[in-house]
Length: 460
Image (cartoon, rainbow, N blue to C red; front, top):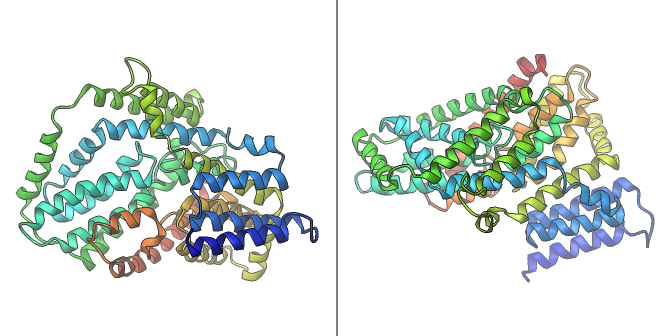
């Protein structure tokens, strides 16, 4: 075992021995909750054990010191956990049949071979993929492999340094942000949908897009303009780019029957999600229906034995564990205590200034968190509680703002696994990321604050 892991395990064990058992003294339940939060974040962020292993340790801690065992297990049966489970089948069927590559290349053809157009279209491609791939890493891995092959061919003709920066850094940012575009776009978004759904009975698949699409799309366009100004793409013959894309599409051959089946299943699922206010079937239930269709004989594209390999059980257990953490913080009153401390510290009459400072704090804290989902389990309940103390802003508005700020990481490659994947292709440096991210981060805070004050304030 590495020295770092030994140190982190020792810290976690000392925290447990000092605060959770009542051997030495009986700590307040809020102190126990904070100690548990530090322990589990140490295990998750430090990656001492696999995510599932650490999540099971959390289940034991909660069952012994906070909930009874049956209550702890009940969170695994949560409907949004099963929505996460279902999306694994749908997204992997989309990728494994080759339909994802076909869709990606077909969308990129809309650029007409223009370097500037290719950058912008590639950014909006992430939104299209978010409808069908609820994994930021999955989307990014698919797209960067397509970009790398394209750029490797272009390198033989002309340098593509700036084009590579714009494509790969842009994908790093927009993989996460496009995951916020739809309620099923990423694990962190599915979790947030469950939390916000408790605050608003009007929240559904369509209203989610109405609330969150405008600020994300506006940021995407501004990010594109930033890249055109800071890293203007090289002038490349349009016909060369179009020829490379057409060649790749030709390699895929004619659309296959499995691809058609997946198109039908995904189309049906999205239609049912979009019309949820009419038929009143829950989004998780519709997701499970779509997942089941992928391995149903004659309709589906694979057998159960193959389909079950697509489920990442580590992520499923981790996802359930994040719900347990947030409930622990809420039910013990720990979130109320932290919110009160922040409100007393900020001490400002203007709710707008309180929101602005909160968003800046969240953006700064996000720098040290690799896992977005684990981060949101802390800051979302905190935002809701603080929102209850602000007279002219709703808890839902505060939570929506904090969610959007907490999703992307702009400055360091360590802020997201997607950043590390894109960085590994060596089309940009850490300095490049920091340079563009410094501007992008400020722009994002301004955009979110603007929509919170000028739009969401009047509709939520």
